[in-house]
Image (cartoon, rainbow, N blue to C red; front, side, top):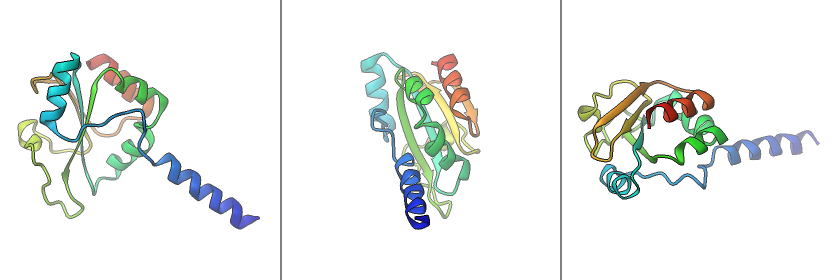
Length: 137
């Protein structure tokens, strides 16, 4: 019985860590810009690294929340990994330099043409994230 309870607990944590199916994340800045221009929406950009614990917490606990999913419906969500686990650059679109990203996670709100509207550095829990998106879109 104890083993069954542990298996159920482990399975439930794996399910909750899966990406949210109803949020379509872009992974290319040019593609996100084209979609934002077409839909008349701003771009929300999550800039993260593989080695950042707060980035993982944001992706596993905040983004899947009902509040965040509702907030993300009004923007074009873009997720860009800019460093691998060893700290090597994976920034193919130059966002670290262009937007001065030095802290992770960095959350950016952009116009379709890439102009910065707002930025937040660090983790936000679901309700605060949803409020930040609503205030800055």
